[in-house]
Amino acid sequence: MPTMVDVARSAGVSVATVSHVLNDTRPVLPATRQAVLDAVEELGYTPNTLARSLVTSRTRSIGLAVSAISNPYFTEILQGVEASALEHGYSLLIADPHDDPGHERKVVQLLHERRVDGMIVAPSAEPRDLVAYLGRHRVPAVFLDRLVEVPEGDGAPRFDQVCAEGAEPTALLVGHLAGLGHRRIGLVAGRPGLSTTRERITGYRHGLAAAGLPFDDRLLVHGDSEADGGARATAALLSRAVPPTALVTANNAMTIGALRALRDRGLSVPADLALCCFDDFAWADLFTPRLTAVAQPSTDLGAQAVRLLLERLAAPDRPARTVRLPCTFVHRTSCGCSEQTEHAHVTAHERTLP
Image (cartoon, rainbow, N blue to C red; front, side, top):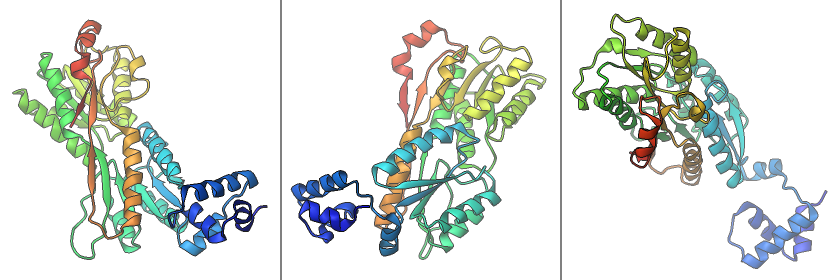
């Protein structure tokens, strides 16, 4: 197996120069750098990452704790994290906390024990133990998709955060349905305690107020961010003495549940109930009718989380940052608009939201 000495001899440089090229620890002339890379390729040299981590105290690995198995939205985010991590020379260790605070704490500890350089975590609705562990062990971390309130002050842990806007896009969905004449608009909200749930409820209420509609708490039901919960919540709304004529579902899993509940009752969208959903997904355009949705910038969220983490690793004491990314309103037909109307307004409605 070729060694770093063999690479240095082939490239006509010192072993130190080879190390600087492979580890990006010092600027090297472009011609010299290329000679080293050519030698690496020709000899088939593979760096000993274990030995390098013992010297640098870095493993060039990132821990990712998201519920990717149970939530397809996080699967798309994972793609952005993985691509950006690989681009910067980092490997990825993935664990699924299943949105359970106790399990979340365990998987984060396991990732930490694997000596990852930092972590990207989509926190649960009760992240107290998570925050305490990361802070106590001074683990560089970025919170993804869901915001966590961390006390500021000297000695407080610094956590960067990245998520999509939630309130304004939800208000837009409500306003769109109100503009189509609906006066009883229901919301299937996510799991209580999550910042995404709070923001989408806020947007729902703002959308109603902007349309001059009263808030009726009987039209807001929690679906716990899961398909089965979405089905139960939709069934509860349909059982009201005066059910809603339109519905906003607050994530893609609950949208599937809502559609299942409607099918089980022999109801169709949008003839019996208009539907708009938060989260676009790959097959939303294949449903009949096609789903009007808010699309989150999933892969961009993942890539931004990696960038924030690498910035934190480079400057551990810099102020914490929270980055919000815009969403896009994708106008289709489940809201009750015809195909003709959809195409007529596609330029106006397929737009980026703050």
